[in-house]
Image (cartoon, rainbow, N blue to C red; front, side, top):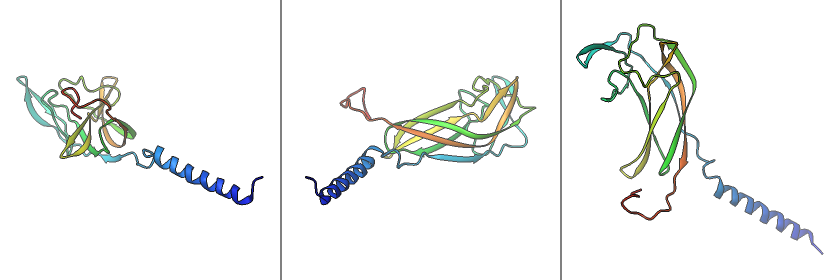
Length: 171
């Protein structure tokens, strides 16, 4: 025979267990996906630079980075704090592009019909950091378009290493 007080105890135990289960198994749900809303302020006029003995016009924007591997190609970059070692997956939404009719870019193999991301995760001063790099340009029908504004969300997938430390595992 079951008494009413036993039913209440079962319900209370179930609720406590359920709340505990959710708090332990949904730790990633409690963390918001980092996101950035940006407006890129492109320079009105290009600057000239020399590359491989030829003069080129460089179109840039405030905060642009240029690398030696792809001179003349501006990169957008952003950095986020991570909870630990992780893989990061950037996603661009609400992207607004504008034609870039007079633009030319030397060695433009990084510019395609879609934005391509490069990511890097590293530990700096004890803090895990995720970096996202991309060229804010696309090429459609042989013509360039520049990215004016966008929302960038970055999904984080935790990497938990179970291998013992050694020369191949320094994380």
